Image 1 (cartoon, rainbow, N blue to C red):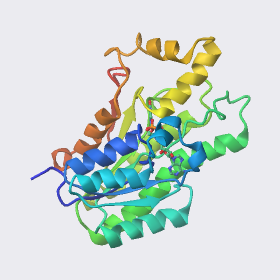
Image 2: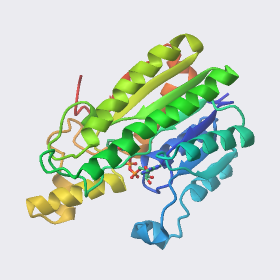
Image 3: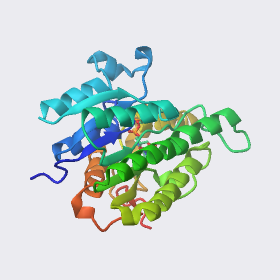
Length: 280
Ligand code: NAD
């Protein structure tokens, strides 16, 4: 029997080919879960070249990968800033797959436009970052935990924060504040539902090789006056004890553990998955 057999899980922000969300959705399915793969609808013209080149269909493609593994999967449009879409996605998941017992709040942005100091911050960009990265997790947790309390089955939630939720980085707009908030929300919710057989934990990825990190590195390379490839080859290596960036699949493995029965006495925790970058 696989560790997540019988689980119905919903993962947000899971449509990008190189993203952590897709890796999590695939890992949960491999470990036995049926999965609602959700993602904000994207304008095809905004897709990265590598996705366009292979005709990548976002959440639909991830759901097909999961079905090919013999698990059930649905693909849903879900913008976590919309209360209506949040409620609709959870309702559809339960109608089509069964009671929601696993929730992974992975959706987030590190907007390049919002990468400014607080003194120079555009208020609208600050508020929109907080609305996606923190309020989005709140909306999902609220609706998700209501569903879990209603059906009463053993359930678990994992929120994705960041090392930028552990300590401040300069010129990160609303990203640090939002990710610190995700850790606080995780602890509050864990305390509230600890006696109701619902566990809530958090992961802080370090530098993980995704399109999001490439965007951040492209900006930093420009500031440093370096070529992107050269910058990417050297950036972070000296400060990560394991001397490499992480893989999305390495985040997914920890997420699956936290959702599953081997973590039955673990709640309210925040785990750095960062190659030893931060050891507290
Ligand atoms: P990614 O850009 O591939 O994934 C983020 C996903 O969130 C995308 O699919 C995006 O479309 C989605 N999203 C954005 N706004 C949304 C909205 N309003 N509603 C629903 N979905 C929305 O990046 P990733 O690197 O895979 O990041 C996944 C998570 O991990 C994010 O929360 C990110 O902050 C966090 N993280 C990543 C790193 C890293 O180094 N890559 C480090 C620390 C934390």
